[in-house]
Length: 72
Image (cartoon, rainbow, N blue to C red):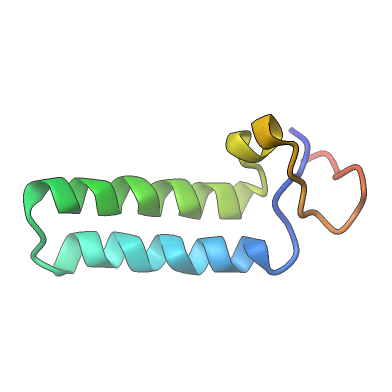
């Protein structure tokens, strides 16, 4: 898998993911809001942790420090 999430974006995604999961778990949102928070949090956390975002591939975006990304 080629890295396309790097630099400052990676830790930001991880923090946003953890925050969204916390909000989903503890904010007392309605069921739909809780579900959305869990989905957004999971996606942000996983893409930040593995350094790859399928949407960025489709859009041609690469924020890895190297021009071509690197293999994981």
